[in-house]
Length: 238
Image (cartoon, rainbow, N blue to C red):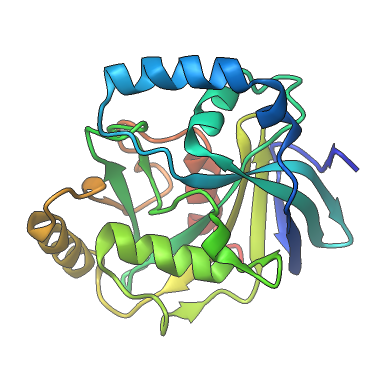
C-alpha cells in the first residue's frame, strides 16, 4: 500500500483505520547511529527537548472515503531526524487538528512557545499521535484532538459540537486530519481563557492564542498547511 492518496487537496473522510504495528519502524532500525548523533546536536541547541514517544507511518491510503494505514511507535529523536531526511525514507507523518470555531465563527489557533521545535509557528492546538491515542490498536483521532487542546490551552472540548465529518489534507510535509469543534463563546473570551491558562503554567507549551477572523486574516508564522484549512472554513464548506 505504501502512500497512496491525493496530495494538496482537501478530502472528505468518513472513517479512519490507522493501526499501530508493534514492530519497530524500518526507518528507526536503519538509522540508529544518525538518530543518536542528531539528538545530541538538537539537545545541545535546545536542552528543553524531551525524547518521548510518537508514531510514524509506514503506510497510508485513501479508499472510498476511508483513510487506511499502519504506523509504528518511535522516539521523538527518531522523528526529528526523519524531518530532515523524509524524502524516500519510507515514512510519513500524520497528525490531527481540532479546528476550534468560536461562537462568532472566528477560528482560534495558537502560537507555539519559544522553547519548542516549532517556536513561533501558528496552527491549531495539536500534537503527534502517541500510543495513548490508540484503542485496541486503532487510532482514536478525537481523543488525540481533545487531549492536545486540553494540554496546550486548558480548554475542554469533550462536550463541544463536532463536525459531522473528518477531512484530510496530505502534502509533502505530512497528512493533517481535521474536524471542526464548535463552542458558544466568542473568540475574544476563548482567547482570554487560554491566556489565563498559559499565564498559570510553569512551562507552557504555547505562547498564546491567535484569533483568525476571515479567509484573508493570515497571521505571521502561519504553518503552510493552515492556509487551505482557513480558506476552506470561511468558504462555508461542511
